[in-house]
Length: 151
Length: 184
Image (tube, rainbow over all chains, first blue to last red):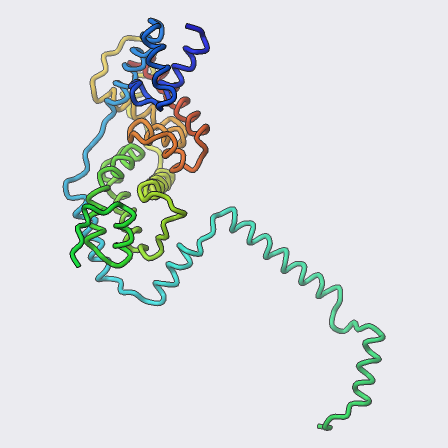
């Protein structure tokens, strides 16, 4: 048994467990065959079987018998308490459907700020009072030769 | 129309729930509450907290049933595992870390000595070792080893690639094995 295949066998035990019949099909047969031939792998498997047994002794408490009933009853109460309303619908819409994950929200905020800054920059660099000469003449001509009703 | 909800798969039940059939919700809760409780318990180490989290998850599902849109074709259980896991992680982050009990400290101080640990102390030690694992390693171990999910499904739930998940499992088990060998 080479060092490499022992290492691979150990990795597979860690990933898929000590029951070789639960391993993915493509590695199962090779694993079983290797195990039958090697006492080193058999010892390794025994060591990890012991390890998994210890892991499985971890404390576990069963849920209360009435857990499902409690959830169902609470959902019924909820229905009675909160009938459908526009406010409820909008709050749910914004909290769930239009929800943006944090990174997307940050990017969106930065883009909005940049757009606002660009707008301000353009506005300040070309304020409404600063009109080009040609434009001023046109405006003057429009004013002088306006043929509409005089208010 | 009389529908036998027991024969419907989870995704069909969700569609019935969206139509407002409370019996379909009851069936879904009956079918899965224990499974999700188990995951929550493994992550929270506390029965009451785990029950509260499962209840919170199902209540969100009921309250927001109209907005559930099969989340890009994901299986209900995969999606709901994500809900429960996220609720558990939020809960753990908000909760202050519990100080270690004296017995546990003693076990560390008597490093290398043969100590006869009773069952409860062994379990407490194991809980402590698992709690000491990084969050993602705990998750990977819980989903794959304790809940028996496939590596692929666990990777989808945590939102990482398969290789990354496998690396988490290996690191978690290797660390635990070293610590358990040292103490047991």
